[in-house]
Image (cartoon, rainbow, N blue to C red; front, side, top):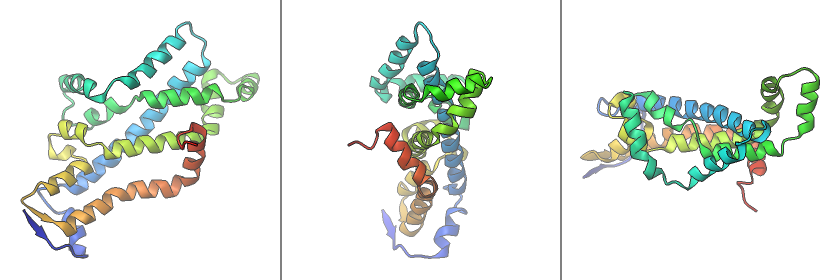
Length: 233
């Protein structure tokens, strides 16, 4: 394998977006769309599920909660093939739907939201009910605004996991137009000759969204991690 000497040059940046063999620009856009969609989806689905399990009285709520928690014990490799069969039967291979939809529900996020909402002050919800808000209105207008720090922590974890995902996009994204950043980077490494300058530039661009997210949400993330207990100690 031939290694090109890395140099800092504008060509390393422009070459990323003009290379016909590796559509890095499209891959970067796909990764952004997938990560944002999955993060928003997980926050909405898991927060609603967690709030329902914590607040809505239901005969089988505890059973449902423990079943969801038990799925955390199932290795991802066990569900990989069945999930691929379902996605393939729906015709979602090489599509954003196939990359996004299977990751919209996460048991860990639901578990954490349920634990958080269990300790959420009931007085605020009772005051909202006295003001005439329905449970739906109470959730969106009272509970959600007062849970932004916690949601930022969960959203950050979800975004990072979605952005760094490799195996599932590798199997599903069989067309170049559906590649993610991680697939594009791996393709650069598998070439007969490796342009280190362009590869390092691609690696830099691939981590910029994560750095920007931490800079913007730093205060919320720290507060949310303290509430989740994920920081240890």
